[in-house]
Image 1 (tube, rainbow, N blue to C red):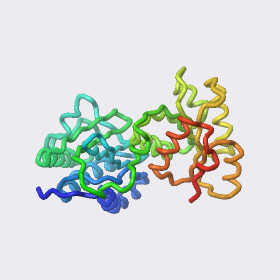
Image 2: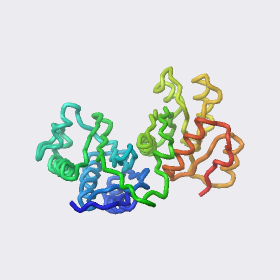
Image 3: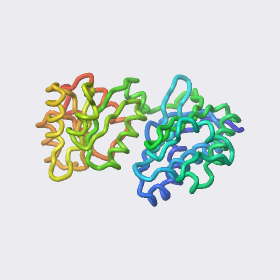
Length: 302
């Protein structure tokens, strides 16, 4: 292997360009998060590892999407591929790295190549001393990760990663959106930032999903279907939880002056879509720790 410092942002950009056509063809979402770090590896071999993981994720995902993320972990970086696919039974996780062996699932039997692709990832990981791990929940999705050493050189990191921006905290976040694909995509992003998202299409859905334990934050789309407003959903969930000032953040695809003014008057922070991972991480941390500070100053205008 020919190891050298690799800018993960550039690597992720290349992977995104290669994968985007197949993602769009299936009507899926592809998200990139927390990638402004530099690792030390063989660029061609590392690229091949991640390509195999991404192709596999897209192949077995019918709806929702795929998230490619980089997370600092001490002196290493975990390069992670999340998907909302069919998942893998717990008792078959070890089998997926064996050449030509496929999990006993009707969908996977119709899609050849799983065993060989992940066997290559495993072998390259052993060659590069990059541990490979997979976690999965059958019917909900899979997370595959490659652990790569961080490159330590002056100037290698000029920007904060999303995980650093999040301050290392993990919050339980209630997420409200009536579009399932958007909801799945946001769940993946929040998980990549180290949080514990609880998704739902309405405040009523979330009351059931949350149970007696209140979330640390509500993340709600401003515009919902059938004329429903995110402000009303937030208030409904606050009332149900018995916490009148439960921290909340609004998301919107409408960057108009009127929308910003409406957010300012409501007292909630407003983030414009598409959501930037680093900005979202900082807003989450700031809102949970100090819900009333700088509400208007934190509004993002793109």
